[in-house]
Image (cartoon, rainbow, N blue to C red; front, side, top):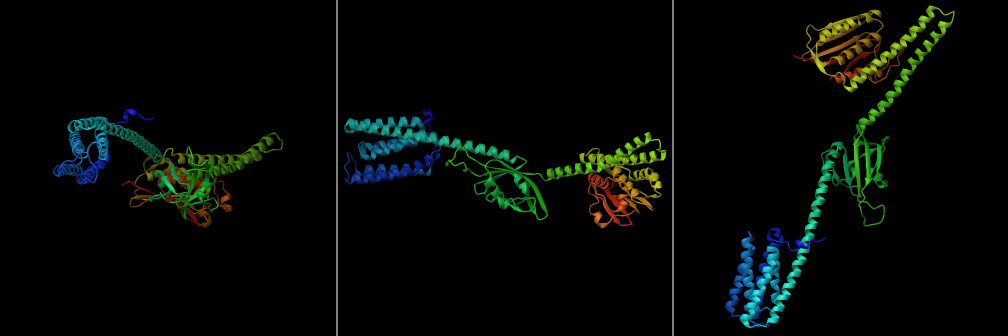
Length: 544
């Protein structure tokens, strides 16, 4: 709805462009009136009143003087505005009275003054302009004894025409203001949406119907690992995708098939030849609230949301594999223990069963329970490492820890007729890591070394170097083949070597050790040769 109360809203402050137009109009009107006066002086046209040539030159001079002043020096304030409009009205009124007369066609130029008065002074300017016209017409009638009816007709025509111009101008101003407000509101909404989009963790892009990117957020650059502007590029150029078989996929072709929201999580973004990112891509056509066409297929482009699910998918696949392998690994010892205990229950009732037979069966069941306990312990250690439990770093006396480990496993080594040696530097500085993780890591090295060494020795080595401490466990065991060395840190992996299979093992020991080493900020270095033993070592920064 138009507000008629605002229809007459004007003022020079609100109309800078209109003011510039009137600066040019001042020169144009001066030129037109001068030309008209010259023609009237030569009596080319019939004119009611004509003063002498000198008076006409004076009028022309003041017209050009005001026009040039108004052009060079824009209005600076309200007083300046009132003075200039007053000067123009006096000059125009005098011109109509003494040169052209109010019934001449040139009177229509007064409408420029009417519009200027409205533009500069709003409703008050229009009223004062019409009052000035009435005063000049009255003076014309009194001075020249003119025809009142003709002059009144002129006043009425100019007043009505001026009113129409003012009203139309007012309505146009309202329309321009509404349009400006609408644009401002649209810009505000757009900025709000862009702010929200730029603060999203997920990558968001928008393309036109041809797949050319128009809008994108900061997360898009982070996900795609680029600093170049994406705007103006085709989506297939920026987003190079492949399926699980490595076949190239055009996401724009997928867009064109979409009728509603579509989500795909089976595509990889090809970063380079050595790296792919698993993406979850959600896309949909952008449909306006109205359309120029009634066709359902009409839309304005596509909106795309990208999410890196590489880690999530990897964890999901690892979890599924973990559950599958654990279930399989647990099934065998449980079945053996259950079967052996059932046999013991039957043998107890049988009169021919001997104590030796019962003892053997119970020992077999006990071994399987020990195996299960070992697996549960490894899983518990892995769980703590994954969740970061007990990972608080503290100063550790590695010298004392090595001696403690030596004492703890001496009996286990003697049981297998092995020598458990201790090789320590004279002075060893402290390290600052999680005590629990370091102890479990060393225990893993020592128990593995004792388990897979049939004869010879196992040596715990602690050496102080410049700013670091190296801890190693060296054995003279069966060693590890080159093919197995590549997979030795995989979970549940066990070598196919028959000597490895002779000992019960979960295949989790070195996998857990690898995780623990990562948690304390180091890596396991392995040196091994088949039939010549192995050495597992880690290096930690030491305190001065």
